[in-house]
Length: 189
Image (cartoon, rainbow, N blue to C red):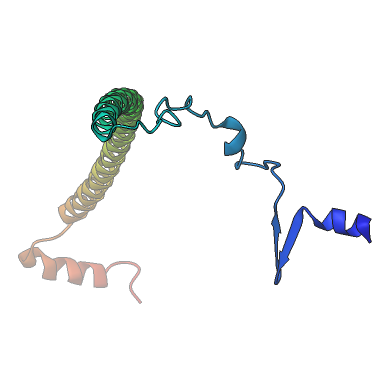
């Protein structure tokens, strides 16, 4: 029973939650070990009640003045520390902003270079397309000219054939005589 009570001494049960009363720091909660306490204040325990109330009043006023001076000094130190922390934070922020600015500039440069490369590639592709179109147009024009030349040649051949055959034609006045001659010729029936 005594052993069970000793093991339970460090732990307090309240409902379903378990609270430990041990002073072992775990994880992030190690403030007790890392905290630095200030030295004891000289005002603590320095008061000895004098027998004369005026003397007590004087000493109390002097203690208040000394305390006010010490508080003023602590406040000054606090202001200086806070200013130093603010300056350090500002310096870190500026450094971070500078790093971000440089990274953004680099990204913009890379982006601009990539855009230039894409523009050059697009220009080359457009030039190739233009050359291909020009070549096709030239070929089509050449093909059309060849076809036109062949058509013209056929037309001229037909005209020449017509001209040759028309040279054998007979005038209308002589036509009747030739028809009769042909009909009355040696091979007629």
